[in-house]
Image (tube, rainbow, N blue to C red; front, top):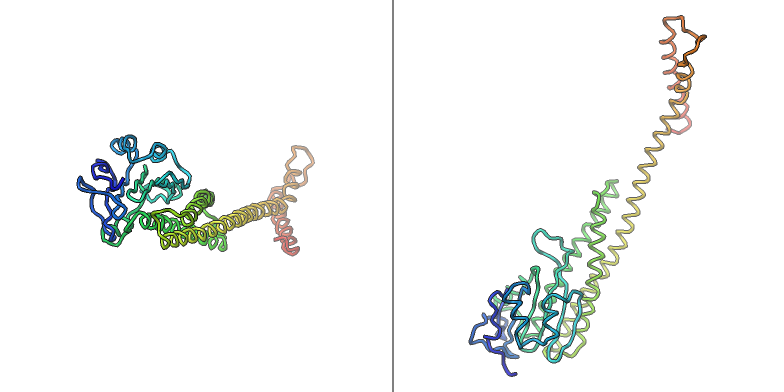
Length: 326
C-alpha cells in the first residue's frame, strides 16, 4: 500500500486529526489527504465515542489483534511489534481537573511509517506536542512524533516526581519542628510513590526497547533520543526509590513522636497521682462514717485538715522536684 487516502482516516469525533507535512507543521485531514512515509497522518481518538469506536472496529487499516488493544483493553506499559506496525501502551500523569495525578491515564498508540493512531478515554495532556505541531516546530515523521510524545509524557512524570520530593522535604521540616502531618497525608504520599514506581518501571523498559529495536521508521538519532528519555525516566525511578525509603523513615519518626507524646502524658498523669496519693489516703481515712474521728467536735478541725492537706501536697511536690522527677 503506497499511500492511505484521506477519506479512510476521517473520524467525525476525533480529538486530533492531522497530517504531518515533513517540515514540523501539520494540516487537517480531508478528502485530498494522502498519507505517505514522508507525510504520515495522526489520529487521536477517544475510544468511548461512537464514531471513533465504529472506526476502530471496522477500518481495514488496523490488524484485528490491534483493535481490541486500542479499544481500551490494554493497560500496563508494553510494546508489541505486529507486522509492519508497532503497538505501544503507555501510562501518563493525570492532569485532568478534579483528579489526583497518581490516577494514571493510559494512552495506546499504533504506528506504521504512514499512520499514527492513538486512543484514550480520560484526557491525555499532549498540549505541548500539539502546540509545536501547529507552530511548525513539531515532529516531521512517525519516529520523531513518537520521540516527542514520549518526551512530553516523561516531562510530566518528572514534574510530578519533583512535586512529591518537595512534599517530603516539607514533611521533614515539619517533623524537625515537632509538627505532625494531617491524618492520611503520609499514607497518600506513600501510595502515590508506589503507584508511580509500579507503572513507570515497565515504561522505562518500553523506552529502552524502542531505543534498541531497529524499527524501520526510526532513525539512529531518534533511537539515541529515545534512550536519553529512558535514562531520564530511570533517574526519576531512582528518586522514587529513595523517596519511598524516606517516607519509611518519616513514618518511623512520626510513630516515635506519637509514642513520646503518649509517654509524656502518661508520666504527667503518674506524677499527679503520686502527688495526690497521700491526700487521697487521708481523705478516705477521715471520711469513714464511724465514731471516734479526731476533731469531730471542733468547728475548726475541717479547716485545719484542709490546711494540712495543702502542706502535704506542697511537701510531696517539693520532694519530687528535689529528686528531679518534676
